[in-house]
Length: 209
Image 1 (cartoon, rainbow, N blue to C red):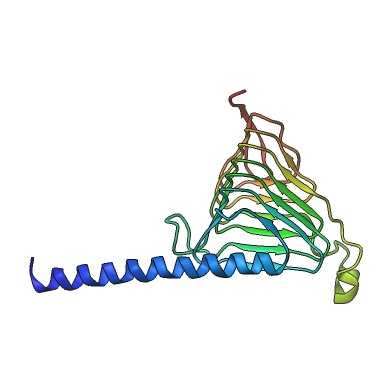
Image 2: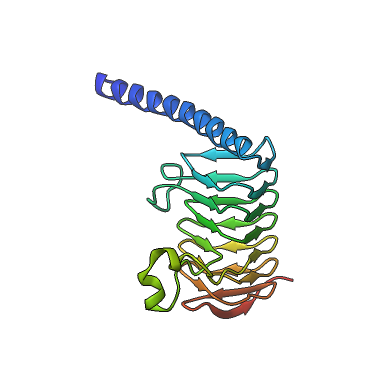
């Protein structure tokens, strides 16, 4: 092995060591923030990469055992900056056991529930509000635009797989064991054990039982 290969090997090993150290810091930061916001979580949850967390006052956050959150630099499928979890004051975000997200945006203004063994792909957005009024005159005044929004809970059942770059909109329930194809926009309920996809998402086929 020549000097060039030795130098490359040294750099790679140094990077891997720094990367592991950074993940340790990310876990310490994320868990400290959860504790500060009085969230209920299990000790074995893991954060790879730096997550962005913003929780309001009096929100109800529960994260089950085995949860994994991956952010940019820790996945090979996307280059989105990071996973971003926003929970507004008084809102409720519950994530079940052994679920995982990658570079996922969750904006919870009222209630978002994610079940057990749920896999959520890179670049997915889950939001339970329109965020802005449909009426242009209301949108002119930013303060008025924040009031009286149409917020509706989102529920994702157990053993669900959400493909990358999917958008899940307000008021949607996705049944147990269902699959949402990559790049879909989900704006209505999906029954259990079905595959849906497209914009807007539509039924493709039955899967499993």
